[in-house]
Amino acid sequence: MDDRKPPLAYTGIGSRKTPGAVIQLMQGIARRLAARGFVLRSGGADGADLAFETGAGEGPKEIYLPWRGFNGSRSTLFNLTNSDAAAEIAATIHPAWPRLKPSVQGLHTRNVYQVLGQDLASPSQFVVCWTPDGAQTEQERSAETGGTGTAIALANRRGVPVINLAREGAMERLTALVLGDGLL
Image (cartoon, rainbow, N blue to C red; front, side, top):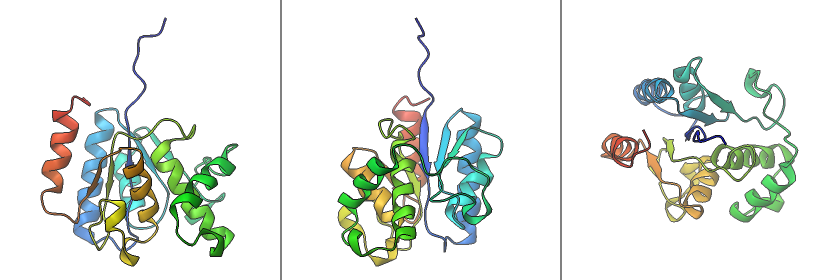
């Protein structure tokens, strides 16, 4: 019998327009979480995604892509066998799903994996992100939240805490969540 716990995973995502100081903060967060064995789940996009990926270094990570070679990434996590199920989940969240181009649907489907993992049944322990509007809930999403809004909404629906670094007190909340809730 194997008594080992599955690895702890978090979702590190956000806007392509994340400010430089926040990029540095994200890299530091990813570095510290990787050192503690957390698996990063992200999506290979410029800005926040690449900040987390860079910060995680050689630490454990799952980089989900909407298609092979997205943004020059070498990740192999794309076009997964359960992508129809992931797309169905994304379609329940995005208000204009039928009107989206297939490539944009792919981007939102990727966000589902970032929160739920490759098996769509292993949610991240938390989401760390940055969006210009500071959204942390499905109800707070706006046009400024961008595609990150899909991940935020899904996390909310699944009871996964969201910490938006645009909000005051975000680092204190992250520290309390990671250290105070016994995740480590």
